[in-house]
Length: 519
Image 1 (tube, rainbow, N blue to C red):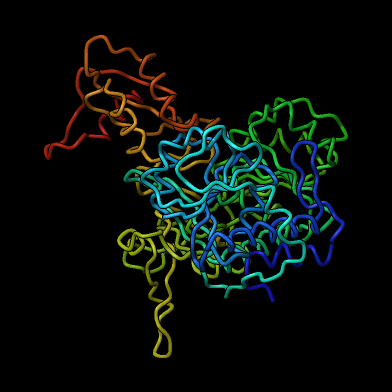
Image 2 (cartoon, one colour):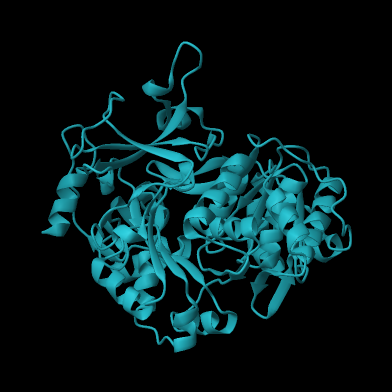
């Protein structure tokens, strides 16, 4: 019985020891090697005094050591905190501070950029992958390579119960800085088993991992592969033309992406070998345009398309049965295995077919809440009336903040978000975080950020601002924002105005500002 995340890797190493587990660039390791590497790093972590529930932050590009560090953290009794490698140092420092991570796993060059920001964090130890930095920060620094000689048999692995916290995934919130969603071992195990069930994954699959490990769908590519002994090929930033080459080289059978990636892949040259090996392709992080879906089906005539919907607070939620795609291509489908999706009114009563309501997710994939934030946790994680009874306490479900509608057959359709979150390139982006970055440049007096529909990105980010001085230009502001924000957060359109509309209570009239931009 699997009760700990690392059971996925341990079981796979026992069942398929010589099978390829992970590939990064020209390096491939087997499941036996992966388990030995993860447990060796776990021994190092325990030697550094890691205690049950302590956080291990991982700030690396997507590579073999990043994956092994996640499983090492849970094997040592801790929790892992994957940090998107495209984030800037200030954002990384926020995650380190908020999570209270005691250990940071990173590379020497990344550590050099972070050294000044570590001062205000709880990080006590840094484990460096690759070359050691030329100048060490005021923290104990250790080499990842020494950890790999520490253990080869998994001695002393700390097992958890399935409700123990295993990871914190940081996702943008509508009110500013990213918030940490706490996932249990149960969430991760059930998620892997559920997704692999409806995708039909087996040990014969080769999964191309193109999404960040800090993104729930990206992490799912690894856990899903490990749950069935599949081969996971890790990829970081890539050009569209590189994907067909990788698919042909490794015989890739499955890819999960976001709409902007799929729209690029449509125009790539696909040799027959690359296209024919693909068994399925899946979309998440936004609606797939119909025209794009049809072109992908033409490129991959033998592949099954899966259209999915998920939110970090519930890991995965729905998928559309491929048999229904021609009948209802705009649907996000029904609940994935071992989950129930409800459409509820504000008072918690169920909506009728055709009536708009909030998507509410219940079941084993409901995460544990927001790290260190009971107020926001209480807002999003709430009881549902139908679960209470004289013999049990009320069950907590995730209220997604997304408005959906169900048809007469129970198929769900996405309507929109109830908050101001921007959904772009598969990411959820906080308008406040963009506005704060604009203010930090010293170049603007007022700033309002929002998203507008975009066929390629889902939503394109717009920033409307008043300049602090008469000589401020949009190009200069854009350059300054690129220095402060990861590329996916940089506004695709900046407008400078003499003033921004305000409501009677003095707040920015976001609806009027947005309407003017659309006009």
